[in-house]
Length: 275
Image (cartoon, rainbow, N blue to C red; front, side):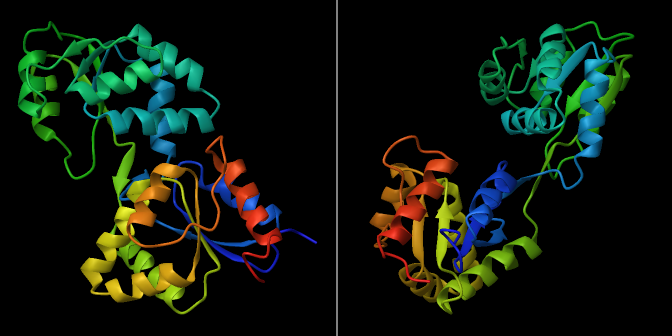
């Protein structure tokens, strides 16, 4: 018999959601997926992958990176497409223009040195810095961020005699996704969820925010009080404890997905959770 058979587990949307959910399902659990983050991958990864393949093919001379999140999301797409190393190599061969310290930090995370930093961490700062560079005839890849098509920046690139190829690698959660979070809160309050699994503190923050927006704080308190809480590590666990909730399962070390699943199994086997 599968060790989590009969249990319903609420799992957060994340970059590794499918892997985490499949681990739980292989143990017999039923998983419900919930957008417990405000930033999500692009709904359709195909344009992002196509942009990355143009990068790898050498079609860009320069890269404008506006956010660290954007670069990380692109690396996620590259990894899932099996082209991560090629993408990193192509970025390393390009001149990078960075809006601020966050994309610089994201570059260092993949082993690359930051290039040109903008005069100020704003669109105007990027444009001012581009104005000091010779862009005539160059091909510029531009990583955008949600809510801002940044025509001002793209127009400046074109006005300098270059061509721009933009990509939007992530998006913000929609109202419908926020309502899905509210539905999950109601399901917990109704006793329809056995476990909720947290892997980061922003997921807790989103639950609290949605509950406040929908006026269902009491339901959230009741739901977390009757739902067994699993956490990937002590940081998110401490946040929930400070809110007054007990932790049913947490890895003793190696705070990753597989140890989290194993901690949940141990809780079940110790009769902390009943089918």
